[in-house]
Amino acid sequence: MKDTRIDAARAMELVERVWTEEIVPTLIEYVAIPNKSPHFDADWKEHGHMQRAVDLIEGWCRARPIPGLTVEVVTLEGRTPVILMEIPGKGDDTVLLYGHLDKQPEMVGWREGLAPWKPVLEGDRLYGRGGADDGYAAFASLTALEVLADQGIPHARCVVLIEACEESGSFDLPFYIDHLAERIGEPSLVVCLDSGAGDYERLWNTTSLRGMAAGDLEVEILREGVHSGDASGVVADSFRILRLVLDRLEDPKTGRVHDGLHVDIPPQRIEQAAVAAEVLADSIYTKFPFVAGAGPMATDRTELVLNRTWRPTVTAISQEGLPALADGGNVLRPKTTVRLSLRLPPSLDSDEAVQRVKTLLEADPPYGATVRFSNADGASGWDAPPVAAWLDDSVSDASTTYFGNPSASMGEGGTIPFMGMLGEKFPQAQFLITGVLGPESNAHGPNEFLHIPTGKRLTACVAQVLADHLNRPS
Image 1 (spheres, helix red, strand yellow):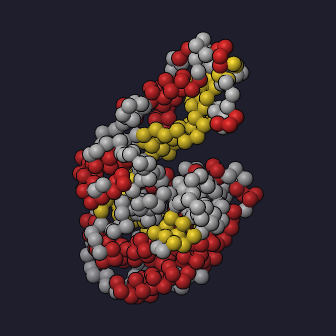
Image 2: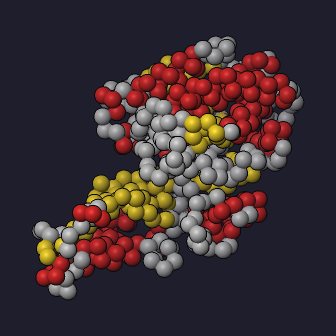
Image 3: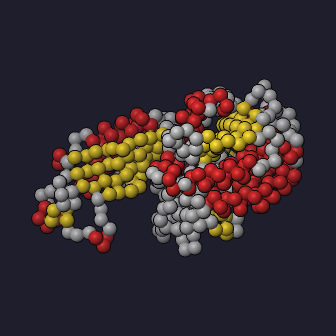
C-alpha cells in the first residue's frame, strides 16, 4: 500500500477542535429533540421532531469547508426523509458512509438528573437519547473528510447517507436505495458508524450482525374475566398457558432457543470470538448492571461472545392483559399478551424464522385455548465477506495510531438492516462497520451516553481508512 502520509498530530488537532467547538454543541441540541422512530411515534410527521433533527444536521453539514460537498434532503411521498451528501473524489471508485438520525423511545430507569431528551455533559460522556445511536455519524463522517481536505490528501468519491427509519427496521430504506441507485453507484467500500465497541481502547470492526424478528404472542382462554376463587382449578390461567407455549421456543432452565433457529457458526467467527473474549476478559459481562449476587448465563467467555453474536435469543419486551399492581383484583383474566423480540443468527433468513416461530407457538394449543402469534415482522442479519488485506492493515494501523492499541474484530448482537441490503446488492464491497457503543453506553436503554474521546479517535481512524482505500493495491 502506498504511503498516504496523514499527519496524525495535525489530524487530531482538527478533530479535537471540530468536535469540541462544533460537534458536541450541535449534538446537545440534537439529543434534546424527541425524534422517535416511526414505530414509536405514529404521528412523527405531524409532531415535527424528525424534521427538526433533519434540519439541524443538514444545516451543520452544509456549512462544512469540504470542496465540492453537496447536501440534499430527499423525501419520498409518505416516507421518512434521508439526507444525501456527495463529495467528489479521485478515480472511479465510490465509498458509501452510513448513519441514521431517528431514535428509540424514552425507556424507564434513568438515574436522577438524567432523562432521554435532557442532554447532560459529565466529563467525557454526553448523556441522552441518540447521541451515540446514531446522531454523531453524520458529523464524524464529514469531519473525517475535512481532515483529508485540510491536508490535501485525495480520496475516492464519497456518498454519505443518513436515514430516519433505522430503529424501526429501515422499512423505508429499500425504496430510497432504488430511487437513488444511480447517485449512490456501486461502492467498493461501505463505512457504517452505527455499531458497537467492545471497549474504548481500540477501533472495533464488526464482522457480523444478528437479525431480528418480533411479534405479539396472545393466549386467550375466556371471553371475559371471572372470579378466581370460582374458576381457578377448573379454568387454566392464561399466564400459565403462555409460559407453556413459550417453553416450546426457549428452554426455561438454560435459555437455549429451539434448534430450528440455530445455524452452524463459521469456524473463523469462533476463532474471532475467542480472541475478542481474551481481549475483553470479564468485561464481557461486568459491563452490565447486574443486581447484587447475579451473574452471566455461562462462565466460558468465548461462549458468552458467541451467545450474543451468533445464537438466537428471546426477550419479552412488553405485555398487555396484566393490570398494574394497585389495580389487580382476584380475577382469572381472559387473556395475556406479550411482545416477543428475537435475535437471530446472522445467516438465518428472518422470514423463515418468523414462520417457524409462528408454527411452533400456535400448534396444538394447551386446553384448546386460542393462541396467536401476530403482528410479526423481521430483518435478516449480515455476515461480512472476507476482509481484504489492505483494509485489515489500514484498520489496525489507524487503531494503533489514534487509540494506541491494535484493532479488534467481533460480531455484534444488534441489527443494522441496511447492511443486509447492501451485502446482497454489492457483494464485492468491503465493509468497515464500527461505532462508539462501548461498555455501559446502554443504547436503547436508560442512561445512554456518547463517549466523546472514542468519537474523536474513531473520526480520525475513518479519515485514515478513506485515504488508504484510494491507494489500495489494484
